[in-house]
Amino acid sequence: IGGVALLAWGAALRRARAIANIATSRIASASQGYVELEGRASISELIYSPLSNTPCIWYRYRVYERDRDKDWNEIERGTSSATFDLNDGSGTCTVDPDHAEVVGAESTTRENGNTKEVEELLHGGRSLYVLGEFNTVGGANSALSLRDDVNALLARWKQDQTELHRRFDLNRDGEIDLQEWELARRLATRTVEQEHRAIRAQPGVHVVRAPQDGRVFLLSPLPPQRLRQRYLLWSVLHLAVCFGAAMVVSSLLLF
Image 1 (spheres, rainbow, N blue to C red):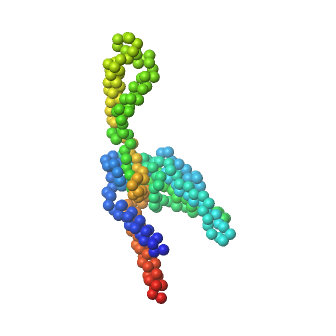
Image 2 (image 1 turned 135 degrees about the vertical axis):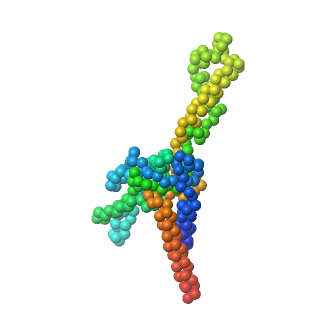
Image 3 (image 1 turned 45 degrees about the vertical axis):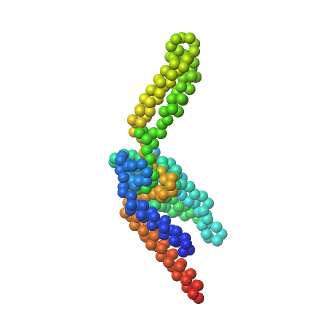
């Protein structure tokens, strides 16, 4: 018990420190990496919870059944993985909730005879706090390879030999010699460069997801101050349990 409480204390304290140490970023100017965001969840493309059919942006549910000993046994569970948008007035980003730790979601418990249903929901149109990995996909951050794309374009041109000879067989001898092929390669390079410039000129899509380095990924309708206070309270309670367990062990060893 003491060991588990000690681990829980460390986890709660780490979350409280992460919330306190990271300043809130604006979506339009957020740097790539670990960020804290606050905004309003979208109301478009809502999903529906499977138990109550309530429109929402995220749900988690558990179904329990009472056994002969009057204990509740979990028989079914599920968590949504649909993405949703977050807007803070400066811009919009897409939130991928997979592997998120959701705190403060609206929770409802319903009992019907020997069955109990527990459902947690995040609603659209409400304030949401997000702590996670921020990346911009596409736009100026597009990962493009000039050589690979030029080779792919030349391969496509080769598939239509008639059109290839019409465009690049300058001496009309029925063959594409080295000089003519070099001309085709230069034209393909200019074409791909123009396409890359057009792609990078487009606005990128901002995405927040679980960090790959294992740092905490939080979603909560609570403001960061309340969320941090909750984690600090949990850390104090876990530490108290740890000390209590240690005192019990000490007393048992003494006697």
